[in-house]
Image (cartoon, rainbow, N blue to C red; front, side, top):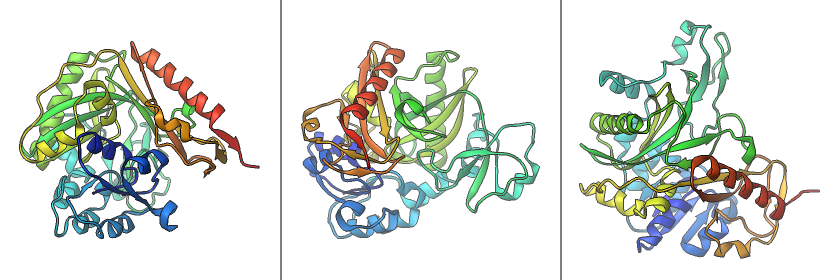
Length: 373
């Protein structure tokens, strides 16, 4: 059983590894329903997605349970999901601690690692007006709700203020057994990229492996390993986990930890052949995967967002393709700003891979969507 906003990628990893899989999520797209059992809240029962409703549905099915985003923001929902069954993931107490931005910052600074300056709403009065700041929801994900902030502006409840650092965004994927960690891969993140219809700080995709003009690959790898080791030791993380970071002048600054399967792991599986789901289960049992050689070339994924209200054309021929996932149903109406599908590309280097992703997104817009009258 896999529960979360979008379960397709983790379910596909489990399916490839030979597991029988059931899923509860927000989307339930055509390709997912062709592969595994799925209940999508809005599509199948006419209810908006939320963590509590998804878990309530999942409670009706037996078997071990895993979770993806956004359940890391809802420890109580994870506790209900785990009741009476094996939980394939970090337990609620662990996720509550590691998702506390101030506990995370303290643990990393104690180990000599870097984090942006982060303030609680009660401390925001002390924010230096000479710095750039972001407001971020404590229970955020995918960049939703993140935006510029300046001292003196009001803050919504359960919001923090974090220094905005200029640099290249990335993500560390690692497996952990509660004491030790092995980095599975490091990817570059595509944030708010208008080429894919995204804006602001919204997550729009990844390119693996990570590359940046101002960062030495060996240094990035060493820093990533130190970060994975530190958060594992401090919080007892298990299974597969992710860390979002910004690299500035070659130094990694940790933004947050995602104590579950993350979006970039799909690319690592495609590039290396490592089964992420198998690595997750084995790590929970104390068996960490062996480090793998870096992948040749670059692998990318991008989420295509609707630039306007659209109606999707016949998508059934897309089921046989390996360069598109999260395929919507024929005739489906998708509101402006919502995800349409995910496209994939592979090229000799990151720049060429990005160009292929942009071309793939343009092809989706030209062939799959028509504007709602």
